[in-house]
Length: 559
Image: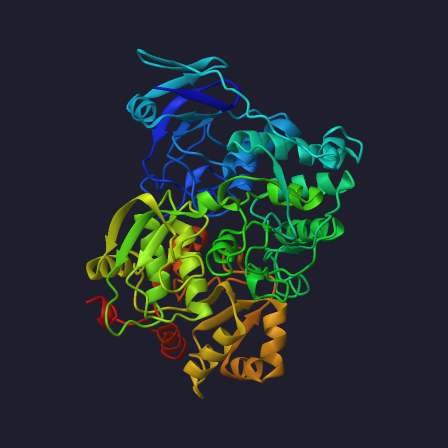
């Protein structure tokens, strides 16, 4: 049994262990330290002061901001123990120590050591090892992998180009060593996820970097933010929340980032080409870029996304490498006859559950001809339940041919699995007061399709219908008359925000239950909003918008 100290420090506390990964963003409330992911085995447990054990994390790149905030406020776990490689919250722990002097130990164990420690009631972590009951696991000596740096890298690391770049390069090099990288690579563009006001720590970090003179050196887009930047005051958003959220966005704009404010950067004109090396954060965008566009990006944590954009350099590791893009699990999918568009997000959700820790290849879908919107929904839902930065779909995605690793194992997704998955995401009542669309941001074609599904009927007077979309998509919808049709029906179309960052009063306070076509929001929504969710096809959402009722029965294709 082997133990490695990834981030040093001392800790003592009760052990809270799970065999299932967790997204810290959307999974843990930074204000309380409690697990809010309604679908996770630890739901309701308070992690403050505990030795938290899980195989790795999954889901959002914003987990690094959540763990930083938990560390700064003292509401976080005493230590983090993983059995697999983990970068997102590890990066947050590293930032807490490097920039703010708050030490949060991070340890990686072999599976055998992880299982043995998880059976203990409490543990003590020191600089030399872990003690629990009669067990003592000394930390193994780590042999540092030599990291070859260019002259420009070394100049940044030495502080010759300022303290901001020195800080950025130091942390990039630390993460590269943790990942086993031997060199850094150039990236052509970035996408910042840390602009969502997930916690005060995100603002503290961004303003500190801006004050240090940080400025991006590659074209860098920005994710959706937590307020409608131009209208939040008129919308009644409290200054206590809206002010810091707007300041966070402004800090990244001051550092040279483009105010794109969309969680779907692949819909922009600047979307990368096949084979292009980029540095994106935002889980759905990373998975879409790798899977559908065949661009190359690791699932970079918040904060690291900025550091890479500042330096133009990223660790050469993970799916930047050909070998790491191979599928280690082949999943045979039983596609039911007559499936509607809810098939794709539900498939992504189930595929992530079936392959939580490795890239899968999905087979059985060779003649399905999914649209880009279908693949967008697939990738977003997959990212909620898997830590993998991409997947392959045989006969559909560009790198699927020959993608299976020779030692890949196998799994199946059956019709019964679809029925069970639908039930898992449909725990709310039939009556809904809100239809939530745009997680990720709606595309132009999705706006058109929803307008067509609504037809000439107006939305029910007691149902709010909100679409979130990027400015470019909204402009396209305005130009072809789609926006006018939606507004005439009573649909509200919001820029800048997405459902993963929306809050009251923009989120209608009177809502008791809501409906969505997003597998991603169907998973995170109960924890984020405190409301019950219904999930279904786009046509079901249009029907709910008109009548205030979700379908009483699962779709026929799941039965």
